[in-house]
Image (cartoon, rainbow, N blue to C red):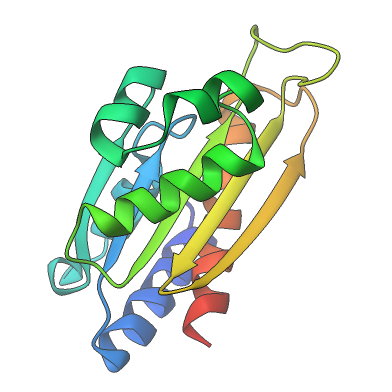
Length: 162
């Protein structure tokens, strides 16, 4: 299901988290659970992966992660503030130590001039430290946007474990 490079990244990430006694939670919109699926593809991941939230709708972001509705209305679901709030909410509503959240436009539709297809925000959160990255991948196809987003999520998580 996943390529060897991503699987190797996931193994390394899980090993680093395990060595530090840390658990991970995911909050995913445009990837629809692919980050959690990648992590749980690795045998023994259950001692590190605490849970995963798939919050595709705005209502799910509000109900499950506590993202304020006014934040979504003001900035849109695909925005830096919402990605940050998703990561913080995932940590708050789990027993994990580190969270990663993604929100974006995977296409082929849904893009605008201001927020085109391929715009993705990835946020990783640990205690009071947040790392956030904006991706502008372009209209390279839904699967490729989602795959690159998963890889970027792995990289941000790895940075928080360093």
